[in-house]
Amino acid sequence: NRVFYQYQLNPQRVSLKTFYQLSIPQYNMILFYTPYKIKIQTYLGRFFYLKTNYIDFRMNLLMFNNLPKNIHNNKMNKKRINRSSLVAFALSILLIQVTFISAQSARDIVDKSHELVYAKSSYSEFSMTIIKPDWSRTLTMKAWSLEPDYSLIYVLSPARDKGTVTLKREKEVWNWIPAAQKVIKIPPSMMLQSWMGSDFTNDDLVRSSSVVDDYEHKILASEKIDSYECYKIESIPKPEAGVVWGKIITWITKTGFMQLKSEFYDEDGFIIKTFRGSDIKTLGGRTFPAKWEMIPQDKPGNKTVIEYHQIKFNFKIDESFFSQQNMKRVR
Image 1 (tube, one colour):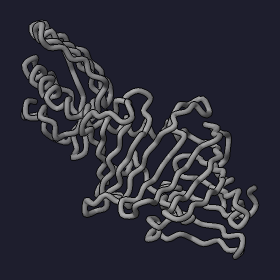
Image 2: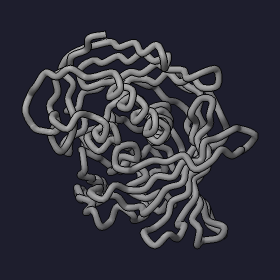
Image 3: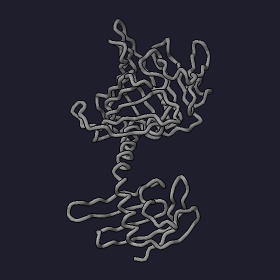
Image 4: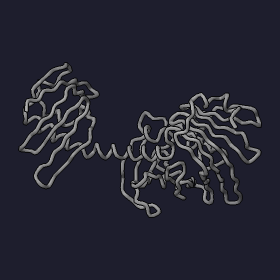
């Protein structure tokens, strides 16, 4: 087939500006191009078949070693591609596809697990029990969230803590202490401090960093947790991300994308605490672990248990609700 393309090459990406389709009978290969994307269908003999989804690609792909030398410049051109170059081009993409799919699918799994519990917005009622070797206490709370930047948690009981509010707006966090009639801003250095005396940190409760976007994700293995087949995923923070953990290992079910376990490591590679999800229930039309346990590694006999009693997903709420003024008014 006569095939033309228009391209723009810069240090970040190649942009394909036209659409074309090419059939290569001797390789049983069909290539489709649309702006900025590529789709390849191919099978080679009876032993190999691959159909990719649309994929992005960057200029460091092997394919550029196989294109004619006169197109390696930064101007917009139209060139005719010969068939041998396109075969080499396609095969180069196939070589990098396995790595791409692995990285992409790991992020997708983490994203689906996160969306399962938080959705775009939510309202929830839950209890938090703080367990120590010689005592325990339980708080009840309700929370509103508008993902990914806004959340507000209001303490209902016990009486001495009633009215305490934690507010997150983007990367900033405040506490309203009704007994002192003060709004206190939580500095980034305190995001790893205990929240309300529990084993959950300020960061756990308000999620000041994004597990999905601030980390690079990789599937390590498949393992069973509580009879569920799970993906074991390693999450390493991106160099520019301002996060509190050096590494997170998460087990997410292959069916339903439920997070059943997470291990949190510091920058030196030491495990700090473990999260466990259990008591699978359907709340708000979604099935997920309704019981969350946070267990510190260095404090035997200590743990904090959160149990969800009610939750509404995609709850209609405006970002103006999440204000310092509303911290004092909300009930």
